[in-house]
Length: 580
Image 1 (cartoon, rainbow, N blue to C red):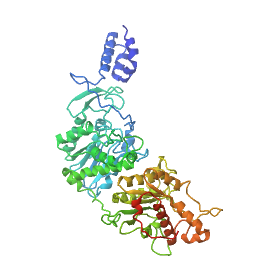
Image 2 (image 1 turned 45 degrees about the vertical axis):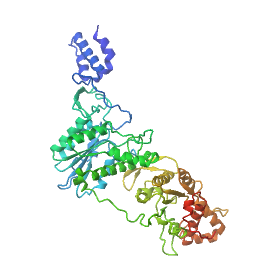
Image 3 (image 1 turned 90 degrees about the vertical axis):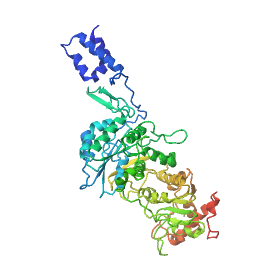
């Protein structure tokens, strides 16, 4: 039998094995030897090439997610864009090195240009950089094996006594051992190894268990006099039928914990800490913790994971020295400070038509400044958290909504009114616009001021976020169409917003909020007053209210409340008449 019969049948696989290909093509080699080589190849393919003496090779963890992550084929570019290891060090201060994959640092550039962010990007925000610096040495697409083989030695050279090294791996420790990305580690925490031949290169490599790689990291860090910390991998947007986030406590999370206990190193279960938060958030909110797939986080999700990592640091007594390098936890003594024991707070969020100068009777006023006059202060107190010049998006981006969210308690009420500032440029000054509509559309935009990419959503999406957050905290959200402007048609009718922001606000409220058409109610009142006299209800321009106009809008809100089916909220109003 001629060797060419075998050669033709196995040609695709032979081409992958450089050594065998050159051997078989060697002209001075006899046909018998060539057939023997081919038979060896056939047997090797039967056992998938990796070998462990005396046993079949255990299969790696299956790649069930099928997410195409970044490859490591542009290492020169990577080295330019990732920080040079140790370059952040200040004097003799320690460095916190972060070692991981795309959930820690997304993509080669790690700049959010695909709408995804790793939690390592935000870790520096929590530390006092005069005590310690944070270096995010993670890279998308890396497994415990590939990071150790390709990037680890450069990081290790920079590690000094007293440094800290956080290691979070597992998302990519799957797939084939010896072809493609060839990044899978063996399952478990045993000390087994296998020798594989990478099909594309013919290079041999010893592959360890996931636990084996963790031990290698730990031993290397300890040999430098530094402190290793193992972590479970971040949770995915994957739910059980019972409404729980799927944990990884039977595979990589468990194995990391087992090695941490064996080696007596700290372990931060970021998977569990964040998963518990997700289960409180609910599906809508968790969906926007991710972007593009069920693994990689948006900026929202990355911040949550960073917060979870910090919580893990504070909770572990073995990490007290590292916790001392954290910034003090901020305490907000303003938002919600008006709360009376046992009484609900009425929060107002919005723009300058909700809160303005609100002092000089002849100046501009927001309706939030006079709303308390229509509520019984013995039953509820108004806390006006609106601020001039903001859109729904910038109110969120600046962290103002986060402060309200943290202050919310069950039974509170949140009035939500945006729209006056939500048009215009998105990425260039004043950079406060959103996408039009109330759908789930989004777009990645480079912000001129920060040179960072940001995912921008629709106006209605931001309103839905406020609504869902309020519901999560047990509060009652009430969405308002924005106040009417002093703009009239030729038929002496006030121009409505019922085909734009008013409509989108109503659509966004439909997920569980009440809706009051403030624009329509106040516009109808202005039409009764008449175009000439209506000017008295505005100040300086066609948008901002005078004190008289602020009262008109507040009274319109009260009228809307009285039309709601919620007797509890109606019961908080003063039982006094006001001008129709």
